Length: 447
Image (tube, rainbow, N blue to C red; front, side, top):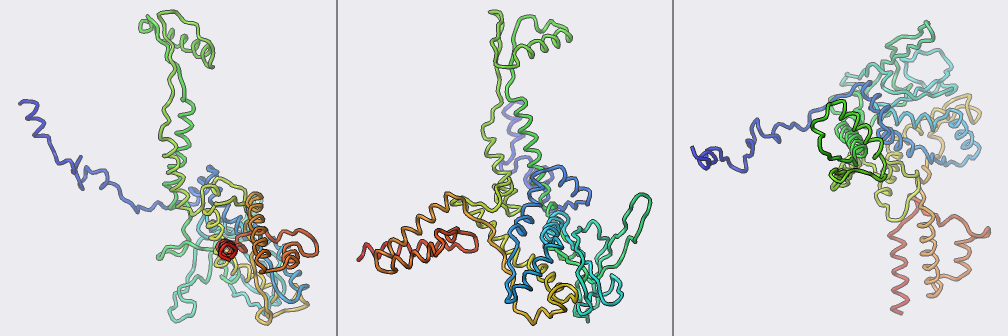
């Protein structure tokens, strides 16, 4: 059979390739959505082995608690006593660890070590009216929790919620073992942090499960770049008689050449010999690595600069992605961290021997938690903002909107130049500043 006839017999539809939508189609053979469940050992190994994974787990937890909060209430002494007690309990660090455990293992916990007026078991609900002291709090992860016991009574107001946790309290000091493996702990004696949970599961989903493929590709990228850098440049030596040399002679010649020409030194060779330098082609490498970083950044909802460890709380001009990140952190503070802090404060107020000279009903007081600003702009951007404000003030003065004394009092006060113009994520209104400047400029030129 002629070659052209053979080609006609082998011809297939170009849309089918190796077989469209059948067992030969590589696209069909891929199955998105095949879940990879990670064990606690897998999570520990991923976290311990990869610094980027540590940043993904730790940085948001640190940002949520770094600036802490301000407690607002009329009684300053009571407020100071509460903040001092929270500091003694190391609440800031424990809540940070609780969120780190939640991101790493799906669930984070804080134990509430209390003293009550009567004897109690850990399986008993915590009665705040019998509370004497909040002695300590400890953060721990679901690694210590063996089971979640839900309320399955459909006529209970707590139907479908976890009522007890089976916790492994066993500790070992030398050969002495105390405690039990499956102690029942009532949910009121713990703070439980959980933000990702599948509908048909009770335990939270570790953040690294859906990120496993992206982390694998990132780790592979790092290894590949390392190999390319190692073999980035090598030399090729051509000479007659190489093919007739024994293996030992070739090895000895290679060692000699590697020693002589390891650096960019002068090579002295014969006229019939040739020494050539080969380098690895890196075109397109940056685009591939950027794709990996962009995908990982989108998956964890963190800007690349934050994942890579940008200085916490400092933003340069036009870093809108970082501003959005801190806005997301602020929302997490309000929705997820604030209830836990309020719970601790309520317990302190109910405690008979803690503060205020006796038990205080938290609902009888007016108090509020206000999280402190998460970030400030860098010095260059702050200087630009100050210049913009000064130009705006000059326009207002020139148009008779305000008097110079009013501007002096507003900007400098009685103590001179202040930091009031330092913009933060909770105070700056970029659109309002732009509108005011533009309006003043229009009024000046139209008038």
